[in-house]
Length: 205
Image (cartoon, rainbow, N blue to C red; front, side, top):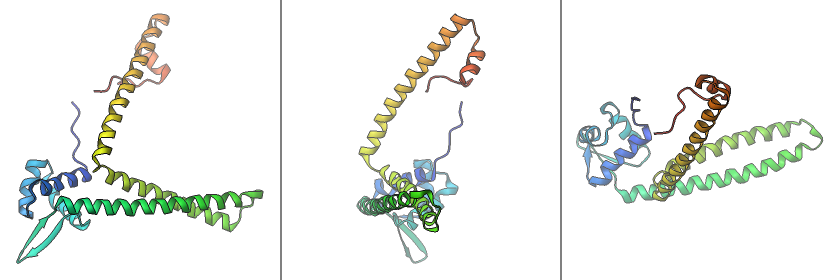
């Protein structure tokens, strides 16, 4: 049986936010350290760091009263924060796309005659940097889209279609193997080696 993987940081952050949204209450750190492992499966040793990362990102509010720190977060604030972040990232992504297109045109122009100029090298360097920025921004957008119910539902539907497609191709592979065994009297290992089929090839669970 495969060992179950631990929760990723984003999964821990999402589950911890559920504690605040579901209760709509104010907590001390000691309260979160008791609740998170028991109800959300977050490892006790990571609770403090996960909570601090949410505070740093302004997703959870923190206020010191006397000698104690109190933490809270309400769905309305989180929704507005996500919308602002999405708008900001979309704006940056659009600007990066426009700049990339402009640079691509400039690069194409400098290719005329195939001369390697300093200007061309500089533009290529800037273009590569913008490509990296775009990739980073798209990754950020994808991270926030995980909170969108429509996106989640679309992913679920896509997974069903993808799994069905994988099953069809698995059927095809097994059919080819069966035909080859009957036609040429090859054993499984020889067929797998000839077609590059992994030894553990099987249907998805």
